[in-house]
Amino acid sequence: MRTRTQICSLCLVIMVMLTLPLVSRAQQTKYDFESRMNMESHVGNITGHAKNGAWVYHRYCESCHGVRGDGDGEVAQWLDPPMWPKPRDFQLGIFKCRSTPTGTLPTDQDLFDTIARGLDRSAMPQWSTFTSQERADLVAWVKHFSPRWANEKPGTPIQIPPEPEVTADRIKAGRDVFARVQCWKCHGVTGEANGPSASTLQDDLGRPIAAFNFTEGSRPKCGDSDADIYRIFMTGLDGTPMPSFADNIKPDEAWDLVFYLRTFMSPPSKEKAIAKQIGLKPVDMNAPAPQQ
Amino acid sequence: MKNGRKFAAIFVALVLCACAAMLLNQKVNAAGEGKISGTVKLDGTAPHMKGIDMSKDPWCVKANTNETPKMENVVVGSGNGLENVVLYISEGLSGAALTTPAKAIPVFDQKNCRYTPHVLPMDVGEMFKVMTSDQTAHNIHPNPNPMTGNIPWNQSQPPGAPPIEKSWKAPEMIEVKCNIHPWMHGWFAVVKGPYAVTDSSGNYTIENVPAGSYTVTAWQETYGTQTQKVTVAAGQAGKADFTFKAK
Image (cartoon, rainbow over all chains, first blue to last red; front, side):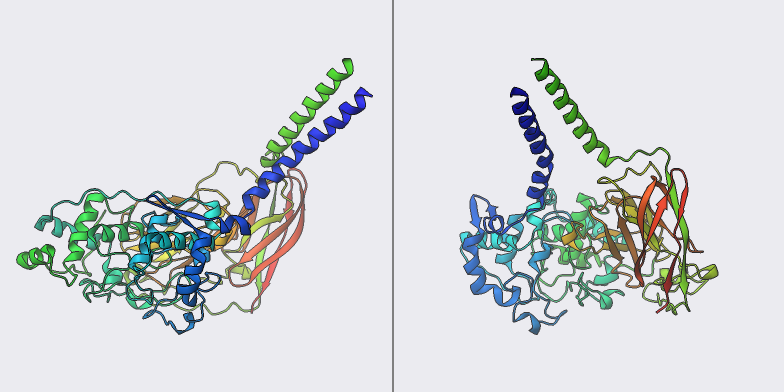
């Protein structure tokens, strides 16, 4: 009698043990309706809830970004790149404006900032009318569209050292960085987006895309503070031809490059004044490539 | 009491067996392994490969003065052998992953404004290296489908840049591009388990294949995939020849 119960319990234990790996696997791949709807975002001390973001999205975002968040809303067909970039496909989880390295998810703060900042030279306006809570809820709703947030964590934001003082030497050093990593291949030696490769640029989905023209007076896509410009070329703009230069530009050199880029940009700046004073010339694109 | 002990012993033994099986599942024993070899050919006339105009970048033009560079979507060598065809085992491998024995790290070089090799095969999770031999800036931009678990990235490699080391999470044929030089086009062929790529005569050998029955898949970027059943005896070579029809 005793042996039978023992056999039974033994069989039961073994069966349970054999099914354990299956259960854990199911948990890994399962990304159901419920867990998507419970997606949260955390920005500062605000917690955003996807469910609360749904109606804001429906009211303000859906016409371009689509019900499924695939960037195929009813208005999307009227947006023609490169003049009017197509709305982002949230399902892919790939974003231009990140503080995180290329190939990683952005932080909640990055998405939160993008909503308020808008994207210059696109149909995406500045949504500064939303409350912080509404924006945080929207971030959670945007995240709920991509299964990537169930399996991955955002990347670690890159470190930006304190900004040094602008000097003529730093601007000249920035010009050397510009020549060495060959920003001019797309952006042109005068920053007018007329480099030799500018005309054939395509985004990851094969659509034409324009390089940033520094001289037109429009803002860079992901913010126009010095730190924003630093971040843009160190993280790259994922989904576009703009690569990350993090492996090839040291933090100190990165500030030099920021100062040099400022000399192209139209708003009056200390950098522009110094460049004029020292008679800074554009780089020579026919010169042999400077070495790392 | 005696019975109880007996059962306890059986129970422990079973649990140990289960654990061992789970571990072994991931590492197929390397002893007595065979291989699969063969030739991949093209039936018909090879399509015309367009010449590449590199005038956008004078450095690239200078690097290619000896011969006009051509596209590499279909590369046919002696005896109509097809180059750059990736061969891998799509069915029959037991366990989650075979451990491939230590070998040289796969390298993808940007040389004379081309990718060398044009197709770089690798195992899931295997580290590979991207380097540049050129005196002009490239950006290396693989474009996988993020839904597979492989995430696209985009990094610059100016002259003298240090190599990049990466790996991929899932099997996928990943297109690689350089946005600065739009003609640059190559592949990271990520497969599960042992693999091979055909040489200029269309010959290949997949090494370290344990005895067993398999389905071998041949993938060519223009013509797609073909499969064949192959049986490998311990220490012997299985044979699988493929023929792709020119379109």
